[in-house]
Amino acid sequence: MTVPEYNKSVDDYSDGLYRFVLKNLGRADVSEDIVQDTYEKLWVRISTVDCNKVKSYLFTTAYHTLIDYLRKENRYSPLSESPDVAFEPVHYDGIKEALDKAVAMLPPDQKAVITLRDYEGYSYDEIAEMTGLSESQVKVYIFRGRMFLRKCLGNMETIL
Amino acid sequence: MKISRENIAHYYILHLEGKLDPGDAAELMLFLSQNPGLDPLDETGPPAYSNGIHFLRKDLLKKDYQNIISITEENFEEFCIARMEGQLGRDDIQRLEGYIRLNPEKEKESQLISLLRLEPDEKVKFRRKAHLKKSVPFTPWRKILIPVAVAASLAAVWLLVPGDDGKIETPVVATITKSGITEQNQATLPLENETPASSESDNTMEEQEYSSVVNEASGITESGSTAPEPALLQPEGEAEIIADPGDAKEQHALMQADEALAVMDSESISLDRIDPVNTDILLAQADNNGILTREYLRNDNLSFTERALLSRAEIVPEISDIDFWQATVLAVKGFNILTEADIFVERIPGDDGKVKISLGAGEKTLFAARFRSEGM
Image 1 (tube, each protein chain N blue to C red):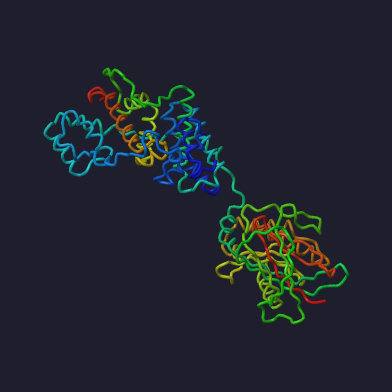
Image 2 (spheres, rainbow over the protein chains, first blue to last red):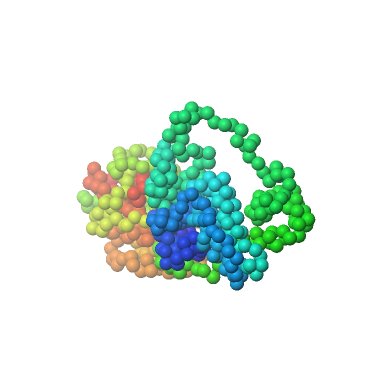
């Protein structure tokens, strides 16, 4: 990978990478640090990373940095089970607000795979490669995550 | 970290234990993606209780949505999510739509699930891009040098070498053609006789072969200057210098074509880099009077032109009496600036007391040079 290719990757992927990390962490300052740290790691390995796989490298690195951070903060549950939340009817101003609040309650693994899937359009096997999970695990996490979001949102009338 | 099939189990276990640095974890994932089917824990072997026995009918047990006979209240959400995820076939989608038609109260629920897809907020931007970007020196040449580095040619015109014994060697022309790359230890190799290809070769000429490998510590020593800094991209290859006086006029003519930039001198040294594919195209040229360029001036590469002119201004010497050694040093220096190569010259005293010339290149490059000079 050349220096111009590296700089292009900053232009092309840093925004998406930041959104991915921010959605999973919810803290702008830490998210920015993680993105910066991810690119520093890429820079160190610039000679070994294939420019065609740089996006995958960035998201993989960011994902693992994110999980490491959550482990240190004791916010990571490796079981990746959805929290047992009592779904009381709540009035939201719109679907986006409701969804944002529901996503914030997802376990880290489920949140990460769903954001990789929805934000970046990665396939199950690509997400499996990035996260180190099996493809079946990825499918299960996404399914459980969506079911959890569905329950969080409640009835259509509650939201609209 | 260098992951291989031999050590992947070690790194994979560290990864499972959460002890792997995120960058290394990313490298591990990339390695696994590049080696599909590789079991990272295979090295450890199957668990002791398994005795290598596996159930072979897993795939037969797995089910698809089409195996579900009917859509019900219980599995309706699952079907909706599967449709959203693109997991349903055409028939299953039709079944789901049929179920919704029969149960209109499910329409809203179906719509709600379709809204569960997260949308990135495009207004959220990463603000530190400028901090991440790296500067790229000599960008135009980096692009140019990649194809050029495959092969190159150099020509030296009019070499007047004052020997240690005061004798003057007559002008010689050297043409260098790249043909490959070999690595050798730094040494001056014994000479090897070989007839030059030129039809105008002089019978009185003797052939001598030198080989020099570049070492960062070595360089131009006679003039007191040091070897150029290693280039970002170095030409790689083995060069062959074949003396051919017949080229002298041709090279001289080429230089005259650049009259607007060249300060011509009858006793000058020039180094040419020629297109490896079409050897008629001169890509870059330098001489002891400064840098001459041809193709890139024509190509309106302004940034390059400006740099070439600037470089030329920096190295134009004030030479009243042409000294071969100084002229060569300046030509090589100009060539290096122009092409980001790091060729250097060494002054090697011959057994006969005369000074010989040896051309070398960067630390990865070896020039094996056959140098022909006129006899005593």
